[in-house]
Image (cartoon, rainbow, N blue to C red; front, side, top):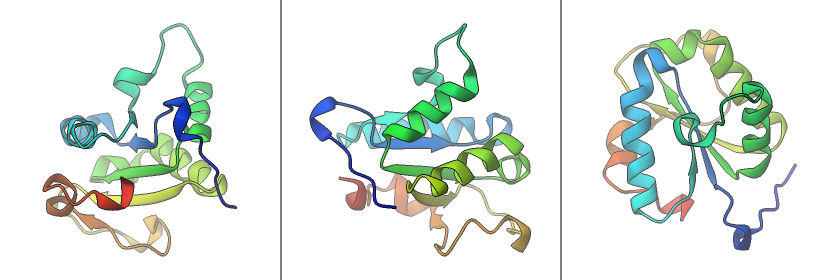
Length: 132
């Protein structure tokens, strides 16, 4: 499935998926870096509204974005919510970029797809050209 995104709407292009337990600081820094490059981002801290169904808000955000950055940490690889997010994103044709945020071994059971994790250095140093 190919996604068609209307850039004139101002909708976020990138969804950041992470585990609060060990990926929140990295996800926040990543969001700030992408926004500094002019890339619109959806992150739960700024995108969710209280009093509304949280999973429906996530689905609505994923239905609007073109890319998902999956912040890979041990907590994220064990999180049922993170797993649901990237599976839904892939089913809907969202391009998933896994970013290994900390040095740990990734079990084959948590294989995200046919893409290799992007190093932390690559994404933070400003090589975000594929999303611009």
